[in-house]
Each structure stands twice: as structure tokens, then as C-alpha cells.
Image (tube, rainbow, N blue to C red; front, side, top):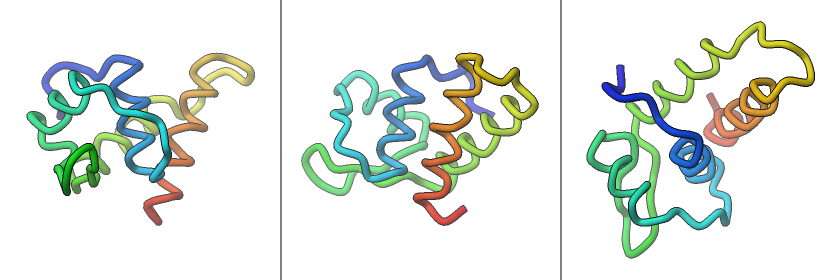
Length: 89
């Protein structure tokens, strides 16, 4: 769906935006996320997640489903799930 997979920092930024967190989104990450259509700018350093961004989070959660308990993937799944919860998905 995305072309190139998101790196860990981009995924963290996407989750942060989705959850309305205060995690600062570096310009390089936000630019790539905007170019891919995963987020949209709503002002200076303010972003909203798009339907395509939500779909990317859902896809990542599905990829991580069934991961090993206590693994780094489980922590990533929790972050993605929290972001989706924050979006009401």
C-alpha cells in the first residue's frame, strides 16, 4: 500500500499524530508522510491523519498480529493500537 515501508521514526510520528500526542514530528518525517498522503497539514507544525494514514496503521496492526509476547513487535503493536483507539477505529 505504501510503496516503501515506514521506518520506526516515521511510524512513531504517524502514531503520535493519530493519538494527538505531543511527540515532536521532525520535518523530514512529516514531509515524507505528507508526500505519501498519510497526513495533511492543518497549520504550522500541526497535522491530521488521513484515511490513507489510518489504513496504513490498520495494515501495520494486522502485520503485527500474533507477535510474540514481550517482543519489540508487541510494543509496536500496542503503540499502533493506541493510535487507532485515539482515532476511534
